[in-house]
Image (cartoon, rainbow, N blue to C red; front, top):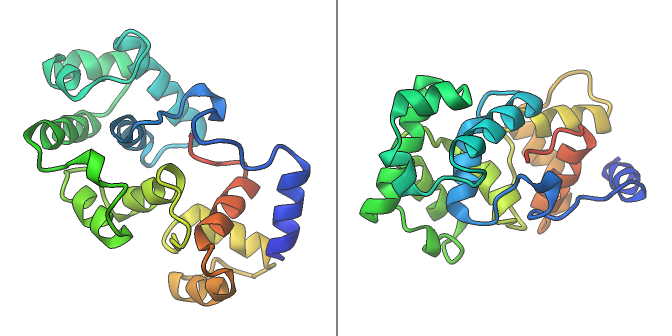
Length: 197
């Protein structure tokens, strides 16, 4: 079942590289988190469009924390098509980074649980965003993003289940994937052609 998914994707263009995916995925941690906030609860297409407008507002590059805080919140919202809540979340992220309460350079060294704890301390970054950051940006090998609707939907299709598996069922199905559960999740996500970019 999972093997068939992997074979199908590898016969195509594979998983692709994080940094090169459609030219819009930032390599740096801050840029990836900005991208995550912008894309929360949106279709991939809508998220990409809004993110491109945000980049355009900041001269074609992801904004730095200082640029986010210096920007007029209402102008940034209108230019990019962001909700007021997302502007608040972007400002919260920038504040945490600048004040040092979120030390992005340390995230590579921390265990998954501690990365999650550091990220969810920022307004607007919840467990789902932390999982997606660990899975797609840090590319942690053993993470099981059991709460991600996309992963659950891909498993339902690949395993021909009648309904979406709940996180407990998904964790049970994913046991044989250890220690590479993240790799399996990336293949499953890609199988839906909805990989976050």
